[in-house]
Length: 108
Image 1 (cartoon, rainbow, N blue to C red):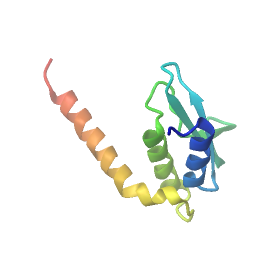
Image 2 (tube, rainbow, N blue to C red):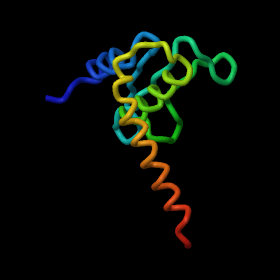
Image 3 (cartoon, one colour):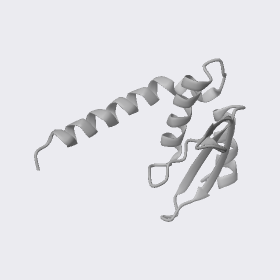
Image 4 (cartoon, rainbow, N blue to C red):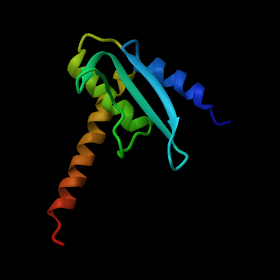
């Protein structure tokens, strides 16, 4: 059975920890778009820092990876269940960068 949007939102919020505010919306291609905002940090003036990136991959893994990196960098003393995925997030980031470098190095 597929979990409802609200159930997924509750689970993601629990994993993200107390500093996160999580919302899930339905995107243009009928996919879930995860929006994780920090309750303490701001970006661009008054707006809260967010793992959401317009036009970028905002699925669960991508948003949670960005959130894990934010926690580690800005809130190193924080304790959130998602931090157990830090090593996997770093590995995915390394793989993406390697793939991007290989794409850029190819002649047209």
